Length: 480
Ligand code: NAD
Image 1 (cartoon, rainbow, N blue to C red):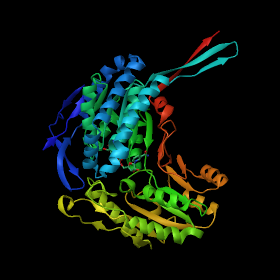
Image 2: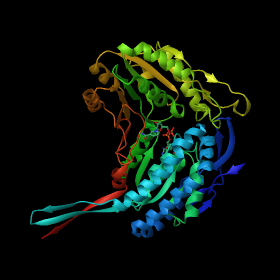
Image 3: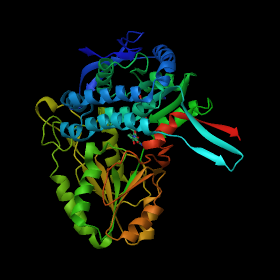
Image 4: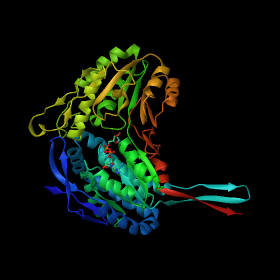
């Protein structure tokens, strides 16, 4: 069975303990490879390598750093098919989605920040004829980047690309549930000639390898994407150490559909925003609010379209919904279906495990579910399920739907459907979410700030925000 390796100081090496963790193929429900069970000692070696590499990497002319990162992007493109298959196998997501979204976006992340860093500039403030102040932006040092399993290479590169482009060296940990594409990525870094120690990838469990990165005194900044509970734990370690911290956490996002929307577009996009990646995207719209005038019609069409989605082998092109990430996660998702019933909800379609035949007979498949009859305050509508489960609720007024949409502890993203321009701007301004889509979903301009409010996180990624996060601002005041 294939044993993945850590990427430390430019080499692919085994964990110091010699211990490995099973890596599952979620569509088959069986172990297909093993990843290093790294501990604090592996992290220490990785941080030492990153510390040694920092002076030369941060001093390297930005166009040379940029060229190396662009080369890695080109290698991702070259290996598209291999990476797509690996991502689908490792995470259970449909191959077609990995090809359309995950892997191209990983290459785009590398290119965006490789070229962005060349254009990054700092400010100068002229204080009349008395002084000139200018801001020096220097890389923070060794950055820790910790990413989740739902968009593995996409979110991994979303963090390490700006860190490396800004001149930081990095110790990164992908999710223990989806280590494969980060491992393949480390091979591409070697091939591209990335200097040793600039990027180090330590595989393993969150509470060992991940916690080791967060606790290490020479890691100056932590960029984390994952669950809110984990984010709080990381903050409780990193905040007293006064580390820079960026936390991209969970969501329970509202999808608000007014009667004056473009009905067909809203319906088609709602199918995507509800069930893409099996609902395992932090930005999925899991609470659907529909204005009463079109509620019955919309719901009827939504059920019909949802029933036509193909739950199946992720490697088959016709599959819309692949496997959930793990048996434990499948149990959690099904547990929420039970909870929804207990809370008085009616499951209008789906919500049952799917038993496939052939190689996928032991896989973690669940029918996409639509639940109605619940109010906005119940647990089903307040807690993140992170699976192919949505609730649908009618509303009568703009004020009412804004209050309901804002009623959770989360504030990551929201979607608004209306052809009334004034209303679109008004509602967007009142929604407590870091990202608001009007008449679209998931469309991203990588230059815009990305991040959540409330329990969905602290800090912003994307564009200059990310390059600012990985640099320290120093003001130099020159008295004239
Ligand atoms: P998770 O919090 O369980 O794990 C995320 C990463 O943190 C993994 O690499 C894990 O090993 C590591 N980790 C766990 N405990 C740690 C610790 N004590 N110290 C350091 N690292 C630790 O999250 P997950 O289950 O992998 O991902 C799903 C969650 O991620 C969902 O809540 C989803 O909403 C969220 N998410 C948020 C965004 C966003 O941009 N806001 C994007 C994707 C996913």
